[in-house]
Each structure stands twice: as C-alpha cells, then as structure tokens.
Length: 134
Image (tube, rainbow, N blue to C red):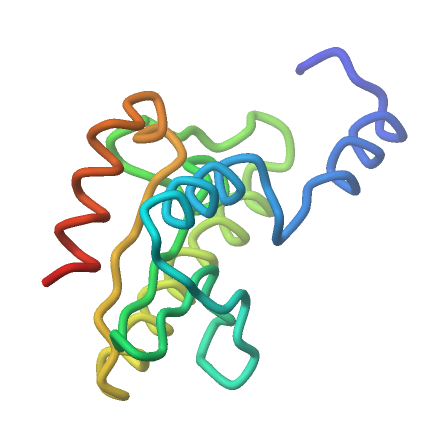
C-alpha cells in the first residue's frame, strides 16, 4: 500500500486533469515556438485530440505513461484494487487505439508524444519538426 487513506487517494485522483497537463503544456509551448499554430481538443474528432493542425491534417497526442500504459516506461498497475486498475488502464489503451484508427480513416496523420520522452526536449522537437513539416 502507498500509505494514503482512501480520502487522500481520492483527493489525489480528483486533481488529475484530462487537459492542460504539464506534459501537454510543454509540447504546446515547443510547437508554438517552432511557428506552428493549432487547435486544442477538437470535440468533433474522435477522442478530442490534444493538438490539431487542420491545414496539415495532422494531430499530436500527448499521453501520460501511467494512464495510457506506455510499454517503454514499465508503467505499472497499482497493487490495491488491481482488477479495477487493470480494467481501467487496459480500457484507456483500447480506446486510444480505436480513436487513432478512426482518425487515420478520416485522413489524419497522428503522432504520439509520451510523457517520458519529454526528458529530451531537443529530440521531441526534432521529431515534431519532421512530423509537422513532412
């Protein structure tokens, strides 16, 4: 157990946001600084993607390693309420895959930036520049 009471855990989880997260804000500043303009969380598109570049038909998704179970990070499942978390986190992965397939079918190119990749902002910047310029 992590030492938090149920009330403290609930409070922590309540503070987790779906948009305007620290990783998303980093990517937004990076892309804006590169001169690209985008729309945020377009509700008309499957999954309300994070950054949408309508003229380029490109989308950048910023994903947290824990919430979207990034393999490269060894994202773990909490030891308490294992079945709840396994179901929730696997559901997130399935939904991500489903939404990405829909976006591709609609003619969008999708690039995913993982939270752990933001440790090397120069590499992320190079990758995004290649993706958005191609």
